[in-house]
Amino acid sequence: MSVWQGSAPIPLHTRAADPIFAQTIRKNFGYGGLARFNRLARFDRLTWARPMRQASTMDGIASPSQAEHPPKRPRRWLRWILEITGACLLFFTAAVVTDFAYFVSSLQNQTPSPAVRADGIIALTGGADRISEAFDLLNQGRAKRLLITGVNKATSQQALAGHTAGGVEVLDCCVDIDRNALNTLGNALETARWVRDKQFKSIIVVTSNYHMPRSLLELRRVLPDTTLIAYPVISQNLKLDSWWTNPTSIRLLLSEYVKYAGATFQLRMERATAERVTARAE
Image (cartoon, rainbow, N blue to C red):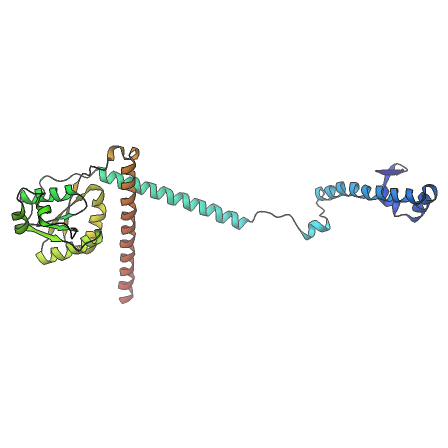
């Protein structure tokens, strides 16, 4: 809203600031007319100010309020951190998936050797088939003695003897029973004591196929100079050919993989610590 002077429009709020113009309005229209004119002038000031602010922004001239409070821009360092974090998570996920696939494929390639022989046999409890297979190897003369490690304290000798045709006589003759081990690491520690006591140089390790990688890992930690021969027992609860379609197989594989990865990480940390101690001693 404006009045014209010559060829250029003059805003009303500019004319309202002129005392002579205000006196003329008051004389012709009275104080009521002057009040109405002032209201129009205030509206006109807002109408003119809006395009002026837009024009100043387009011309690169910031208003005082914009100079005091410049528009916020995304911080580059925060964006970089988010991008780096996302890339690291993507790389970690890809590495875990690849390692898990390798873990599963290694189980599919496990096959027991039919002509295996050693000084001793160890059977890690956790499945009835493990004990039966270990007794079969002992009865075939594949080793001198058998250690069944991790036996529940409530399990009797008669219950164990039911897994072999020789009965209790075989237990009394050639079988040692460990009831102290509560997990795979405990199995390895008890096996190490048994191997050193018997002065064996080689042993056959009997356990489920999915449990074999972690069992060998723990045994190698405590028996670095002993030859370990894997004799995996095919678990009836694990369908390796179509494990991704079986919820039980998925849970079993994921659980064992997490435990195996944890044991691997712990072993690497122990080796790194031992290397640092050796380096300092030298």
